[in-house]
Image (cartoon, rainbow, N blue to C red; front, side):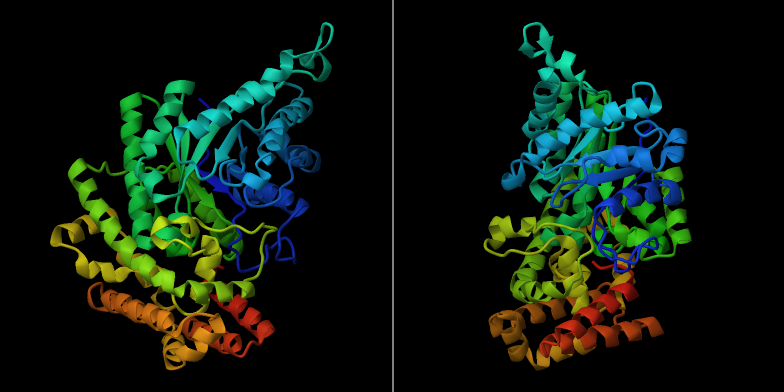
Length: 522
């Protein structure tokens, strides 16, 4: 049995600070190759996700790693001791550049040739591929069979008489790839077992890794829904494992702020308690670069040793029905506020600094039938905009608590064990100064954001109801608690003033300062 990595370094652009190893805050090109070695060698990450979904990426990464850091990889065989895993575009979603999939899959075989030459024996350094936005088992089978037939299958094509492709350029290794579906939307997370099962039946792998998104569900449905959807997905995967007799190793993609999963040095024990049953956790850029290196190493080391931290709770049919009702209530309240706030959020996006050479990417929210026509940026940028306005996104939609029955309230607390703790962690980032400023001049703010005045006033009124529920029903205390929080509130207030005055450079500076204070861009 191969080693299942517990920590996966990713290229998510959520860091407020520049990496300790370079002055440039935008990580691109060969800097990402160095970053991979840094993640392995310095931080202790066991896996690196090499991302070509939504960004340009270097498909010669294996050659560059082995050439530049040969001593490390002689002792740590890539593909056996440490791992590099491609995330490719989903051809169904990224239609304009779907043929990048072909280029990326072809390079898997090239990487095997390079690594086998380096190690002087057959080594397949890349054998897993992450497919984002997976919504159907057929997508996995298409990808699996394309590699088998379209990449490896060309070996026996005759080129000239008895000369085949295999004779001319050699064999293609590995002979098959392992797929990791990345599940990101509510409907797919609720039927995650039905997506994975056809792949198990057709391919008959000895195990499967399944990637549960945590950021996009938060963007689309809010904090509470994102957390509960993760619990439902983990439960369904565990039951699938029992039913099929095939080990399932869940991966969770989390950031350091509560909205996107709350994996941070100060919440390590809380994270382990919340996400029992997870085998692999993402180590994103905000965690890697916005905290002291020793703290990050400790987080990675603990995860490597302790994951999976116990077994996830199995959710019975009765509790699942209750959870579905809770999801609908929170989703409705969250989307009502976000739909109205969307123009203000998008007007702030231009001030958010780039951290990776990403292409434009519209989040799933823009395609949701319930909020048709509302396009939002990706989750990190979305959260960064709201934090910068002094409106932590964690609290949006909490008014739904008022509509819960006693049974629903009890079930919510049973499965979201750290709800109050997560909310308390960001309560100090709410800015009453900004909320009062926006309410006092909402007509001018609406004009600046290019939106209807009533729409802005409606969103803020609903958000204040969310805050009231957090205070009265959950006992959350808002406002600055420390000198750092006071500095933060002054900084986001200065950002709002600069934004209103269209002082673009000052607005960018204040936004970045605030992100550094909370130790995450978004």
